[in-house]
Length: 401
Image 1 (cartoon, rainbow, N blue to C red):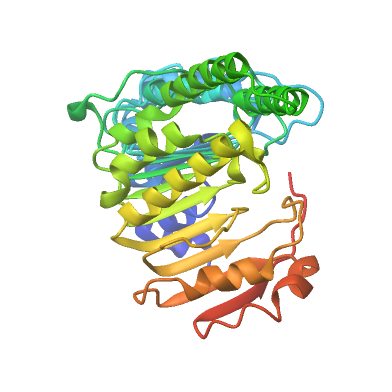
Image 2 (cartoon, helix red, strand yellow):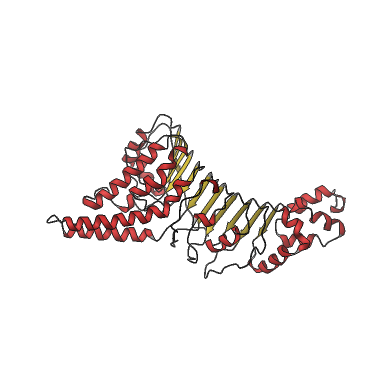
């Protein structure tokens, strides 16, 4: 059968499967009158893909053209992708020169926060936002959940490309209850500049305690307490917006490396009872070893206890996922499905006895446990972790752009 013998509807399906590039569709519309009519059907334009930076000006001219307004209004799903940048970061300007009021789903790849923000401003009704491999080195815009999330958004995902760069987290006011409807939020590889600030401050505290180990110094302790309180207040301001997501049922967040006692209690704890899915990345007691004593040791212990309160409050969880997470029993975890995953970024050998003790303390409603580890961790856990509901999966990691 030749293509001329296809019905119009079959030819429409062929055009849809030719891809979502608008330039290709324009070319198809110029072949003949019949193709012109079919290629301009609104049903062909449900999805749009903008993935060639060299054509950015052609995209802009097409989207601005009154001749293609009906097709532009038919778009429901928009994808914008850039190649992986290895040498320098270049902003795509004027990518969406017009408002696209009917787009409900947008996904991006390798864009920075500045570019994502410029796109979202043109999509007032978008409900699902999925941003993959966000460029972490561009410092022109902070991570501001209020600016990045629209009032109609239901599903939001911001996954940074890696944790090599630092992203400023804006201190924001609480959400207005009537202005947000988010039920699923994924924020992955978000590494703020407070990562180094907290580490530096704790090292200073440790040095002071070692120098003052021969005698009591109440003035020195009081000064450290004031400095730590100021740091905690700053951290709470950065993360407190999480507590005001009143419709949230699925939360994925990483890294929570710098979550202190107050961050756990004031940012995460208020929403724990409503969560059905919780996934947390990168908890290591703020980098404080369990053997630490004095004021620094109390910081780590307080944060660990606050984290345990969050797990106890999350009593309706269907799924709990812990990635590169310090496991220190007793931890009362109640979830039908539990997944513990360690990547090749976890620096230490796993403590099989601690993991086994943690699994023995799990609530009876835990139906299955999955432990995903790289091959080098097998000797540390194989002989210890024998829980009947446990499945051990070996993961191999590859560096992909």
